[in-house]
Image (spheres, rainbow, N blue to C red):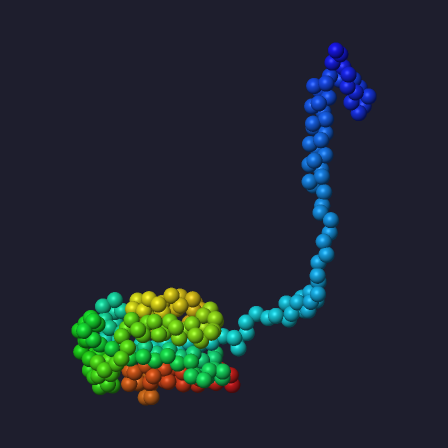
Length: 250
């Protein structure tokens, strides 16, 4: 039997083995080309596309109306958050001018006095803080308060979430606000997780006061002292900030 029985597409006689190799390669190439063919077009419903595109064009980056100040103040038995006691915590949310947020019925205020009990490690107060907090009544309130530090931590974390505001658009504010945040960070783990999501931009009134000192003024003259209670301190800070803001706008 002759092995030259097959004729390829060019009319050339070749062996059966070569012919089979050729046909297999041809079929494989045809299969690959078929896989590479584009799928037939499918119908796409474009209803509402123009409206969607227009909405995207009109969308804007967050404005200052979307930003807020979150004011913090804490009262403590000392200066070291690792060894001293947290006595009182307060936070308030205002607009960027320091004014009450219009839609907030409760004025977006969180305030708690923390209870001393048998499970609270009471460290020694220094002479300054024990005199200060005896005079302003805070020590007495701590003895009779209903909320432990653990409870206050959970309550504040829930409060921050329930505001419904984007943490990244809330800017920490106050006097030496890093001090207050440090205390919350160390002593209130649930709250700490949310504090880390707040804006990295901070409004510290100490900066304004130091600027006034540099310009020859005295920001610490009469009227600056407080009772060293959180509500009194934040009232002073926000009032002072409103005054500065109004002066800048003139």
